[in-house]
Length: 301
Length: 283
Image (cartoon, rainbow over all chains, first blue to last red; front, side, top):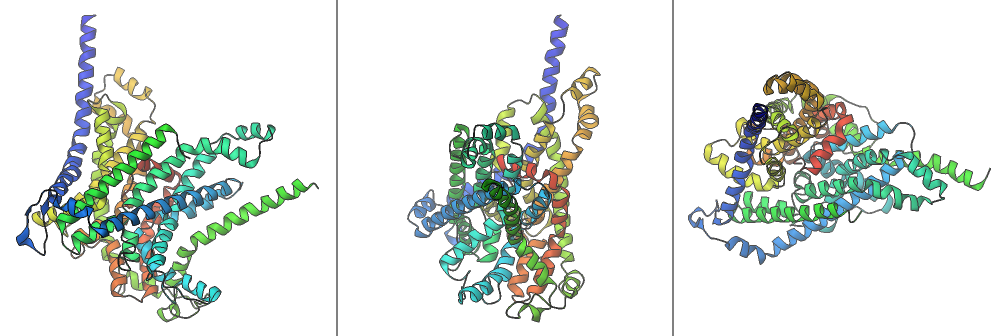
C-alpha cells in the first residue's frame, strides 16, 4: 500500500517535471523575444533617446509622459483611434451579422459565400491599402471616383480631404475584415438547433421576437468574440492605413499607433515614441479588460 | 394563393438575390484588380474605364520574369516565413501538449502569460527591436526577421495547438500509461499522429501571418532582405502610375496565401477565433 502511494507520488512529480520540460523552450523564447523588448521599451520611454539629437540622451524620468498629457496631437491621435476602432467594429458586426442571416436562408451554395469571404481576409493589409489607394479611390481613374463623377457629376478627393480620408480608411478596414465577422457568426448561427425555432413558430412568435429571444442570446458568445478580436486588431491597425494615406492628409488618419511610429521612425524621437507605444499598450489592456468583463457578465449583445 | 404565400415566395427569391448582390459588391475590388492586371498600362488610364479590351498576359510575365520580377522577394518571404513557421511549430507543439494535458506547475499563470504576450501592440515591439537589432547588427538580416516573427507566431500557435490537443480522447494516453511507455514516446507515437491535422492548420495560419506581415518587414529589413510586402509598397512609391503592373505583381504575391487559405477553408473559423479569443494575429 505504502509502495503504491509512493510510486503514485513519484509519477505525479515525474509528470510535472516532464510538463515543465516541454514548455520551457517555448516560454524562454517568449521571455527573450517579447518580455525583454517590452522592458527595454519601458526603459527607453524614461530616457531622452533622440537619434537626431544624440547629445541630449539621458535619463528623464516621466518627462515624456508629462509632455504627452499636454500634447494636442496625442489627444487627437487617441480620438482618431477611438473613432476608427468603434466604427470599424460596429460596421463589421452589423454588416457581417446581416449577411450571415441572409446566407443562412440560402439552402444551396453557402460554400461559395464562404470561399469569397476568405479572399479579403488572407490578403496582406498593405496590398489591400494599395489596391484602394490606386484602383478604387484614386482621383479621376479610381472606380469610386468614376462612379461619383458619372452619378453625381462630382469628383471627390477621397484620400486627400481630411474627413473623406478618415471615412476611406474606415471603409478599407471594414471591407477587409467584415468577412471575419460573417464567417464566425455564420458558423454560430448554423449551430442553433432548428427545433428551437419550430417551438417559437408554434407559439406564434414574430420574426423580430424570434431574433431577439432565441437567436441573439445564442450567438452572444460569438458576437463578443468578434468584438474583442476586432477591437484589438483595430487598435493597432497599421499597414492598410500606412499604404493608403500614410496617416495623412496632415494627421487626419494618424491613429495613435501611427503617431508612435511616426514619432520614432520619422522624427527619430525614440524616447517619446516609446512613451506613446506604452500609452497604446495601456489603452489596449484597458479595452480588453473591459470587454472581457462585459463578456463574463453576459452584458451587451 | 394567400397573401402570406406570395410574400413568402417573394422573400425566398429576394434573399438569395440580395445576398448574391452583396457578395458581388464585396468581391468587386479583387475582380477589378484581375481585370486591371490584364490591361495594358495605356488602357488602364482610359476614361471611363473600359470593360471590353484586348486582354494581355504581359503584366504577369513582367512580374514573374521581366523587369518587375518579384520572384526574388517572394523567395525571401518564403525563407523567412518557412523557417519562422518551422521554429514556431517545434516550440509550440510540446508546450501546447503540456498546457492541455499535463499537470503543469503554475500552468494557469503561464497560460495567461502566453496570452498576455499577444496584447503588446506591434509598434511597441518594433521600436525596441529596431534599437536592439541595430546594436547587434541584425537589422536587415534573415535571423533578425525570423526572431521578430516568433513574437506573434509563437503565442498564437501555442493557443491554437492547445485547442487541438484538447480534442484528443483521453483514453489514448491512459492506455499508453498502463503500458508504461515513456512519456516522450507517448507524445511522439500516440499524441503527434492524432494532431497531425491540427499541426497542418497551425502551419497554414502561422505561415499566412508571416507572409502578410508589413510593419516589422518595412522597418527592420528592406535592402538585403526584402519581403514581398515591402516590395509591393515600394512599387507604388516608385512606379506611381503602373497600375496594371502593380495589380499583376500583387496578385502573384498573394497566390500562396490565397491557395493555402482556400485549402484550410474548413478550419478558417477555428483558426481565426482561437487566435481571436486568446490574442490574435498581427495584421
